[in-house]
Image 1 (cartoon, helix red, strand yellow):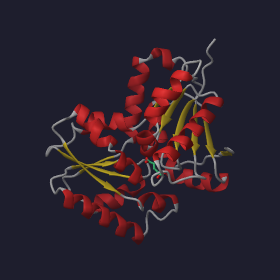
Image 2: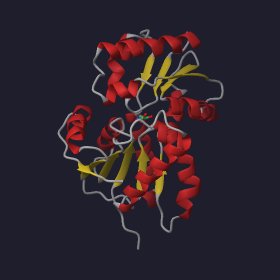
Image 3: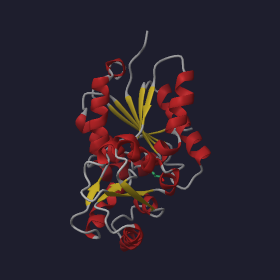
Image 4: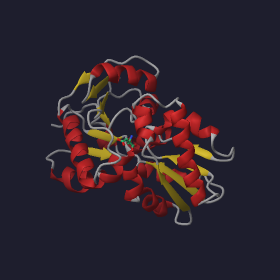
Length: 274
Ligand code: DGL
């Protein structure tokens, strides 16, 4: 007999809350557990092996807490760990579990948003170096040109509450200048890191008015809704009492303060020791 359980939403830190917020808005009926691996953030500068090991460890903990479906609300984990988890780990399990990422749903829509046929990807070093967006976008929109820029300072700015500072303006300008130097025709910029929506206002001020800024939260939420409609065998494994639980591998005090900024309401998290 298969037991149902909450939907797990995982990120290396707080960034996944930008996706969590939209998923909960789109599908409020389900139970959710958010897990932020704040003790080991950032993932963006770490090797493939390390990101895979950390991510699989956290996904297993979400499984132990009863989740049957886990969303990797982190581009870096989606780029570096998802395929191995889907192709090697999940088939070895004795019961049905699913892990989904954020890159494919974004790649599926991005080509419909550009007029010039040129898309810019702003992400962590790990996401950019993996080439995952270039590969995934080419599957759906082979004619589209993709340019990328790694923005290694942006996650620390968000994690350290400096996203409204002048320092943030400096690093945003530097990376946007680099990206537009690679191609001035980019008219669609993907915020391909779930931390970046907190910098959106500042990014908007520094890009031409015709440029679309694409945040992933709503895209991933719609795609999950669609997935559950197409996969009723997975939807029945998701319990639906409308509960939300938050876990962090770091201090709960700082998680609660920070999560409130991301979500716009107070949360009470629990500590998870890995
Ligand atoms: N939020 C993660 C992402 O979407 C990255 C943060 C990190 O570097 O850990 O890529």
